[in-house]
Image 1: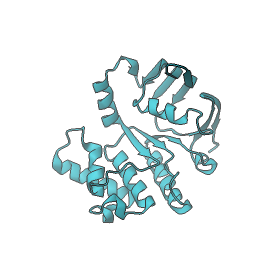
Image 2: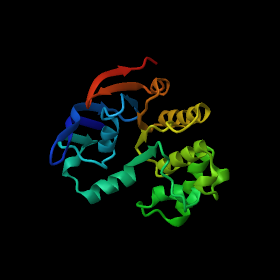
Image 3: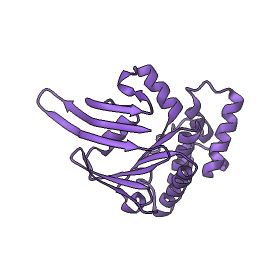
Image 4: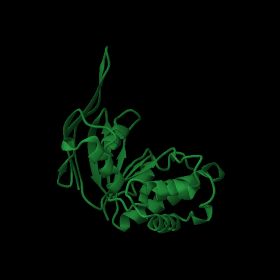
Length: 226
């Protein structure tokens, strides 16, 4: 599904050049659950941003299926994100002025989905994560765990091929964190490909494969025994 070859990401200012990623080589198969770990500043989030096409590498090749993403313009990348990717963030990133149902429906905004279909899909996504009873509430009226479940519903409402999760349990207590991991595990069992950045060894161990990063490089890759 994904192939990264010799990916680099450098940031330059007038005085210094910083290497965030150095020679990243990574293959991710369709249906895989991959966890990325490493200390702060090691390049985890930069890698996830490149995988999510919100950042471009300085050098190297990113193949998504049979498409070389370096050949796509911004409009084509935006379509790819809207039609193929789902994002889950540590800080939820819900819009305060919209209800939970409206927030989730935003996941269909760029797909030209008819209104009746949008309502059905949004309802199904809310049911999937157990948040339907909060449809008319606003984000500030929900607990952190409920907000994260709403964020997952927004990510999956368009039936994405790939879910990118950046510290999805980082702002949650243990119980809510486990509920979020149960949802991600269930989605993966149903066929979704999941790439998750986490600081939790216990949550990383739930994934099928774990990679560790240090100083912008992948230093190990471990496949969990079934």
